[in-house]
Image (cartoon, rainbow over all chains, first blue to last red; front, side, top):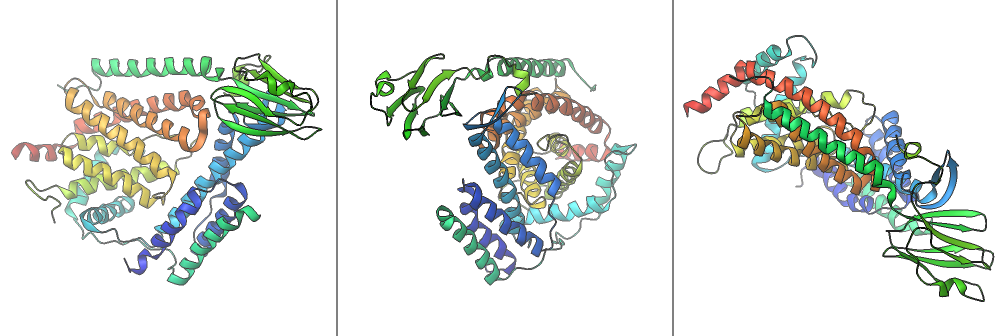
Length: 191
Length: 125
Length: 180
């Protein structure tokens, strides 16, 4: 497991509990901020619209169960502080987990064993599908799919892992990121 | 000879539709029946589900009145008032029951989830 | 390369191809705009249902593994709740579809199988959504979630049935099974 490709995976595993067991809004926001910075440093994209939609949807559903001080009342429906908090924490944590998870596999870690090999083989066929230009909704989809399946079968490629990895991560920055994550956690009560 | 749909498919489809229908009816009819604890104090208002245990400190003019929600019951174990009527009221658990602490301006009552004048549709879809 | 520790060799290329097809469809579904981010069409179930027709139970389980893990890796959700939803939903639907196909495959087409799979998957996901995302409010989104799931399952089932009836590739695979 000393493979450089596994550095983000290991660092991420260290960071995971600090995120999963985070139920306070402010430290969670700081952790999310850190993860967004890491993602941007690695050259990834931040999908603002998707994230906002997730926050709004999850928070809205959580507001249905009133909890805590009543903030506003709109058409007989009361928005409560506690429910708002719970909704925001749940949605922001989900987004943070997705970014953390993307960081962890950003170097395409080598999964060990036969199942790891099977996954690699799957990815090489996946590339075949991506490169085939198969559109989901054309006419005669079934025939085209059929032809493609025969075609892919003929080109039983080597199970190479040809994914381009995001910007490489060294041990030191990865450790620093993990440490920062726990510092945020530890200092949260002081904030 | 295989066909696109068989009788068993129709049975499965109808069964799924019926299950979803019954569930939806249950959810929108009874789903919001869970009782709530509504607390008014010094012009502010709090709402909590009665089925989730909680310990609350509600601020009033004299200080914090402690409200405990436990196993579907609500009671006030302590309040910074002199007469302690609210404490001696004991536990309440049914919709419509209430506890009041006049000196500290805290009013606790249990009610259904639906606002009296509202409809389910206002809340959900 | 063989995955089998004993007995018959596992057809890894067929499994990997169907797994890759599931990934491809999952990617397609990922970019299709949806009114609600949690709405699922379940396109990735097409290869799983195709697999039902000629894979052994063991191979089918490997395909299910590839579907769930490959998806988690490609979309980078392997260590988040999203993966848990995917895992829970897929596990429930894969098992239910297998049982339905083995018990009633003669009497049921893929429309019925898809409906059973979608229902199992959606119930599992609702349960997980209640725990992790929505709280009790999850039940309020259950009806629209289940209804859209039912409709997309029927469409997907009809398509799968068409494919299964007309695919030459699949016919070749099934022929291979019979020759053994």
